[in-house]
Length: 169
Ligand code: NI
Image 1 (tube, rainbow, N blue to C red):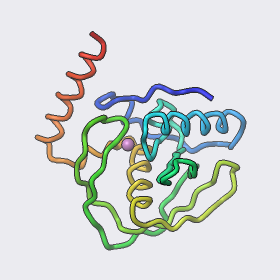
Image 2 (tube, rainbow, N blue to C red):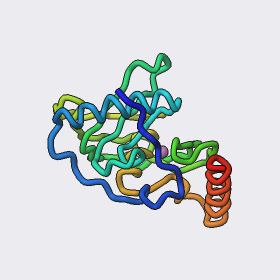
Image 3 (cartoon, helix red, strand yellow):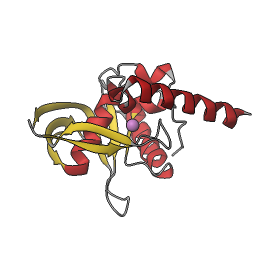
Image 4 (tube, helix red, strand yellow):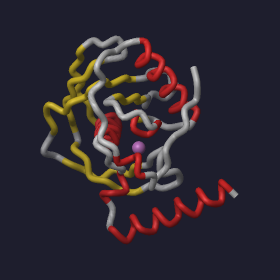
């Protein structure tokens, strides 16, 4: 297993649209283990392959208290979403230290393959539903700050670039 570097906003590579995973082979299984390790190490509850600069439709999530119950979604597709929506506070490992409200569907049904390539249908609500929608946005090249006002987004971009410059100095 290995820790993978996480792309930070406003890295333009975060806007890449991911391609489907062709086969759940040894390479993808290694990527899944590395992504889970990277997510846990960074104390995140979700990570999309896009964030580690791999542009294939793969997500890992762990919202369990013990951090020992990872959910792997390969080629996820939302097949149903509730008309009911709510604002939830979100953060992102690619935008460290920034939290803001984003509107998401309360419940989603998602078709995806698991880490063994088996097709599954998952019905998610609460935090899991929010997390799945947030991570699936990454696969479309979308970062949550893009839902915020242009002024907020500009401030966040400036703040991120400043802290990235300081980290390099
Ligand atoms: Ni994120």
